[in-house]
Amino acid sequence: MRAHPAGPAHGDLIHPAAAAAPPDDLSELHPAVWPATAERIDGVVHLGGMDVRDLVAEHGSPLYLLDQADLAARARTFREAFAGADVYYAGKAFLSVGFARWVASEGLGLDVCSGGELGIALRADFPTDRIAMHGNNKSDAELRRAVAERVGCVVLDSYVEIVRLADIAAAAGIRQKVMIRTTVGVEAHTHEFIATAHEDQKFGFSLSSGGAAEAVRRVLALPSLELVGLHSHIGSQIFDTAGFEVAAKRVVQLLADIRAEHDVELTELDLGGGLGVAYTVDDDPAQLHRFAADLRTIVAYECGRHGLRLPRLVVEPGRALVGPAGITIYEVGTVKPVQLDAGAVRHFVSVDGGMSDNIRTALYDAAYTCVLASRGSDAEPMLARVVGKHCESGDIVVKDAWLPSDLEPGDLLAIAGTGAYCRSMASNYNQVPRPPVVSVGGGQSKVLLRRETEDDLLRLDAG
Ligand SMILES: *Cc1c(COP(=O)(O)O)cnc(C)c1O
Image (cartoon, rainbow, N blue to C red; front, side, top):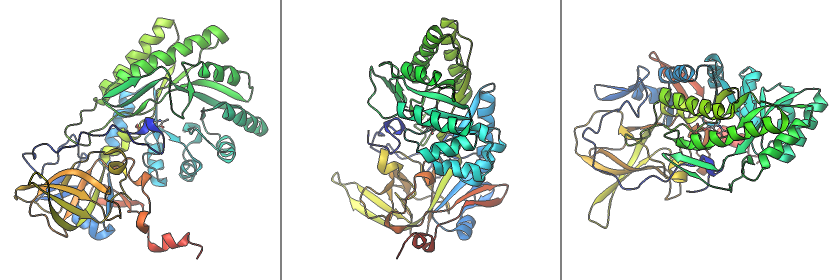
């Protein structure tokens, strides 16, 4: 596994490499992978009732699209599956002012982990009592702002921060609600998890070494902090509840220890995010209602064993809420056949974006599904690699893609599952302006984030 800027707990497993046989139908938009309203009309991909060629004509290429209907259905499913629990959307997956407003209107909470994310939430008038502030190195300024804005909860990550926040809250005359982030010694990605005795990573307080119990002692001794619960986040792109089961067992043990030592029953248990999505038809994430039911059963069982009152459950989906609702459209610039050792030919298909708008393939060897979007084709499949326009040979969007062999410059490609961790991790590498994010529904499009321009880039340049 390679490094991730947000820590190893956020990486994905490296995907098995080789391309399998070509799919039977190159033009299929499989419902497990594509957003709800994705369809072909006369061969052309439509999303939200709009022709992708028209969308590109209006908004340019590359282009991130979000399917409003798909998003609404996902939010509803989360609300229903986790009824009685709190669902906090992890804003790092994708955030804009308009999107934050939508999250609020759906009755969800919001996780932020920087001053910038908090600033967007505030600009959106997000109800601050439904905001949780995360991060392993929140600055004084970020903490002061969070306290002053009456953020609902700050998730504490270090001893230094406990004192820092207590002083800031005391100075503001506020009793700040907090949770303690625990490191449960479980690391989960896709369908595998590892439970280790000690945890070699930067987030949270270790359970096994007693660090979390000590953090509880220190917080309970500080009158400006109100400890409401424990937090655990074990990874991302997880397909089942096995890792959560071990995590819940360990965190609930600490709840029981806290009651024994302090005669306090904490009322909230936050099991973080991490629910996986299907990037390709080979991915098989748990069905959400099932996943939620399993999680509840696990927590209820563990609390029952210790005779603890059932705490309020909190979950923090990022990817699973927004990822599958988004697609990226690119225009093909060149198609270059390259002879492979085995005599096979791979066609390098260069598109007008790449690692600046989707770093996940370069960073984690992520797998994506890709189709020709601007027309139908009956041509034979060709083994392709969809690459970007950046000055890196690792600038790959889709490592192994089967595309029609009549693909040519000017064709549009659509990549599924790019709603999460694409625009939010985008860069200006090679001084490429970042693409816009446009939401589509009912035959209409709405710009959430406009396209960057060269002027935007130069605005930061002191000359
Ligand atoms: C990243 C993160 C999430 C969301 O993770 P997903 O895999 O996108 O669901 C939730 N909680 C915390 C604390 C995180 O860091």
